[in-house]
Image 1 (cartoon, helix red, strand yellow):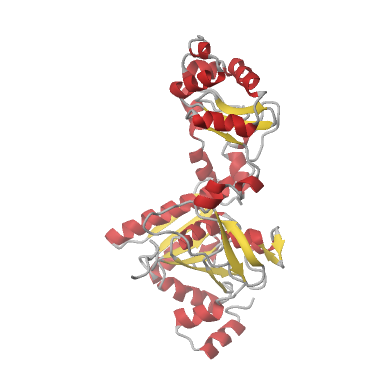
Image 2 (tube, one colour):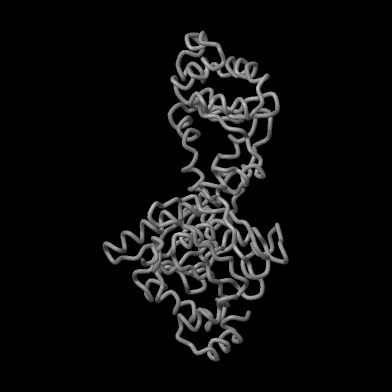
Length: 401
């Protein structure tokens, strides 16, 4: 029986990217089977290589974002390095970069130049503010995207300062958005033969994610404020104090709210005019929350969550990560943590892929490359060089800065 191929096998991607957003995008493509060649600068490589945590001299931060890729080094400031890059582009499907807009053009490697080499190329860029508009030349990191998009202004508690989310969500959303754009462009190319430029901004990605926050203002003129863990559109949909800590309840409709009332032994709350409909509960959330917490005060988190789940009420503990990585559903059945053998760091556990395909299981994971690890291999394979010629190229200014 022949081996089942992953969906994107045969798709060739050249990545010129650092830190999170674009490497995250390329990792999705690589996990799905695309061949990703990551190009790094001489000497230092991707800035993420120096980020904590460090294991045996290697960044676990970098390893998590760059698995399933081959890595080479090129000096794109040299003409020889640019020529090698152009040869790789000529036989690739996708170029992915996250330089500040204008940098690739100044190198003579922007979309308009590369499409002359390969008219069908899909050129994808992730930047802070996109390739046009009054802010397009600004630098943009995740925290900038979270701040300027409005997300931070609505994250936190009413009496707290605006708060960044605990993860680099603007980078991750930018990476996912770019991945969607690339796949859309690739499907169009299969139908038309045309290449495309995909322009994704971290800020746009964050603004598009602010569903209820945007709509409250656009529909009512009210500026959303920080409201803790409560949700503007549903209640009870919040965090609550139990005997030994916090849990969440997501009773997102009248039926679920009724089930919660019955479980609490308070059926009269279903007809209380303050709580009859979801909109009533949203308006009177401050009255309902202490009632629920009074019921929870005698329950442990695990017992309360299980009691609610048994009745079909969405609820969950607020896990710390040590519990997540041991969870039988998340870590076990859903395989959201995978192991790879890294040549220097040793056996490492990394975050798995959230996409589960029935006929094409994503279960092949190779470690992130050492700096320049695959340069000779790629130069021989892609450029048709002999081993001696590849070694000479590596020793030249095409690779060394």
